[in-house]
Length: 422
Image 1 (spheres, helix red, strand yellow):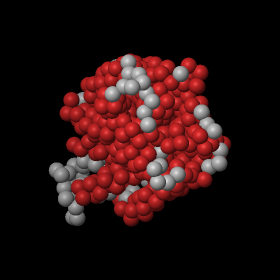
Image 2 (image 1 turned 90 degrees about the horizontal axis):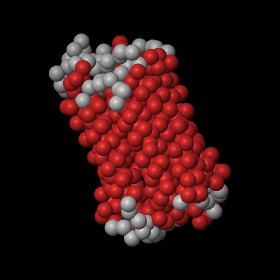
Image 3 (image 1 turned 45 degrees about the vertical axis):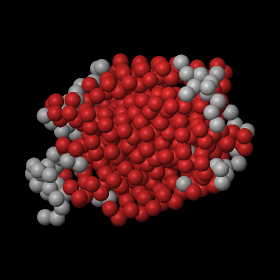
Image 4 (image 1 turned 120 degrees about the vertical axis):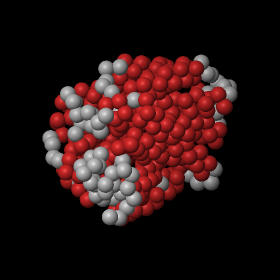
């Protein structure tokens, strides 16, 4: 039998490693495409005559489209297969991101962000399910964290620095156009490497049997599982915090804290570097101590950092700002990861994994990631940028209260791969 094993007959560790690395890199490209608007927006504002409300609307519209798509295409991939959804999605979000460089006004940019959100929403739950299917039970939380980490590393840490430095030599339009290339390369490699769940070789002792992976169930069955419903509700608060921070921090740093563009790019990167570490570390810790203790640790860090952030004003120290964004990015992304991927996929039968993740992401994106930034844009325009911090704080407090009601799902605590209990 080809492939290394890890205590499970037929488990292919080589394939596991390839899938995690490939889907991780691709999610990083997705994160770059989604987040390019933030660091480039101060430049875009002047050219296209936009304001804070427009910025919030662009972020919110993408999230709404992402949410609708995640629910629909995540469930579709459970029925027709992963490859038929994930590869077109990668091509789509790459092309629509690049075309933003040709936008001549708010409406065109808005339509392109909606189309990009729809294709990105199709990628996310399918990539999560594919990672779970390829992973050993002992490494599931860690692998999901690694697969998701590049969104922060490339999209929120490296991306803002590169984008703002590129503005010294090219226009913001050219930065968007360049962004097409990495995604197309990822799509080609995914087409060569990624297998369907039924084709992944697993033996009798495997954590998940292949027959279970392709079992067809109505997507609506996910609402029978208490944790999935609670994940959806908690994400209304968590995403209101995280995506408001992600969408508005660039202008907050330039207009309220009064940093220059290149200085802002470096400070903004703290969020991405923190997110990269947090999204790996928190799920990995939860493999050892349980999902709920790891979640509460994340919330505590995010709330403390945000309370200190609120006290910072014009002329604040760059290092302090970077550290606070590092903490909020790491803790916030860790909370997102636990509620969109780790806990929902453990709470349902294998045949519903992509549906559970997709619908959870959908609700969170539509009502938290969508409405949250739109509200933040209106608040910033009418009450000042500083007021958006209290929307983010309210989101965190709401999220932690809901998470208190969840059932523990970590295999080390339950002795099972999927609790699948009402």
